[in-house]
Length: 190
Image 1: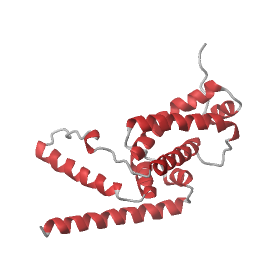
Image 2: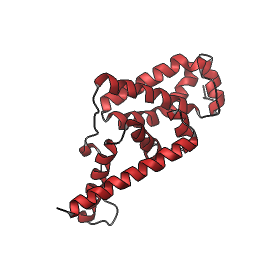
Image 3: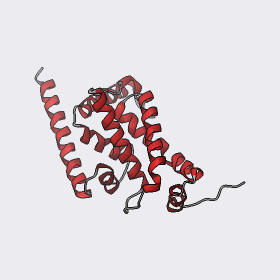
Image 4: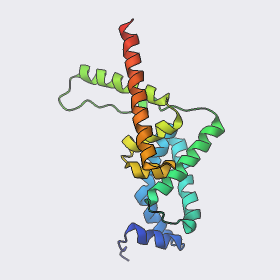
């Protein structure tokens, strides 16, 4: 039997009425994005898989209560993921890092190995700096640069206005710039 194509609003309507196939379509649409978000926040594939499954279990259980508030459905899923990841960190009272070896750094076409090494070292230093930021700022950078979400959707996920997201983004970039400048000054002083 061929599957009919519905827009997200229609799929949500069916899912909120208990249609598991409709929820399956939502799952297929968002599971990769939610997994990526959770992975970057936990740094562990197994925990990311477990938490992603819990996000969709919780979403399926509560989709009947979902109400459209003018933000994408994905914002609701990210909010669930954010809360589960925050609980995960709190329960473990530790902050796990993504091993730098797990991040593939491939040379650009025509790039010399020396250029690749320098770029790799710069990326490594930047990742270390990002991991020193407060959790909220790390979230912002993941949603902005990994998930490529617009500020309005990031605001919905983080429970902030779009203006507050822009302000936090600006302050975060300034803080990273200051850290980079401090690092460069200390390297020059050696």
